Amino acid sequence: MAPPADLRDIVPGGKEISFPVTVTRQDSPPNVTALSVEISHDDGTAWRPVELTPDGPQWTAKVSHPASGCASLRANASDDKGNTVSQAITRAYQIG
Image (cartoon, rainbow, N blue to C red; front, top):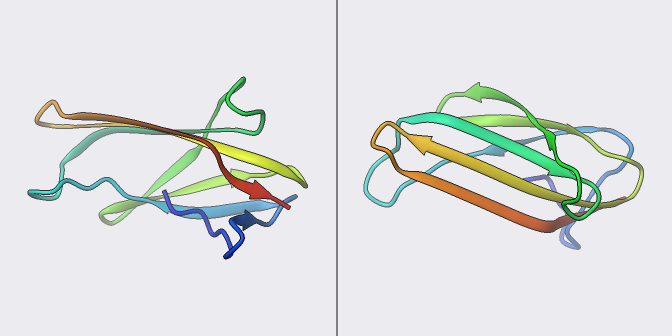
């Protein structure tokens, strides 16, 4: 997940943003069979699904942010070989 944060790790608030989501493996590109991304604006108390659009070997995530605060991200993916990965990043970036 690569949100468009600046050098201070801040993403613009009060609007919709898009960013790429990529699933990789060390040995070969995975054949992803399931992918979900969620966002939280309250340190992970409540999660909302993120809209994902396939874009070649990656996906584009689209999220709406409040005017200020922090965003936490959580992702789950699996491939056709039974491999799975889960990643959660609390306070992934600041909004404002």
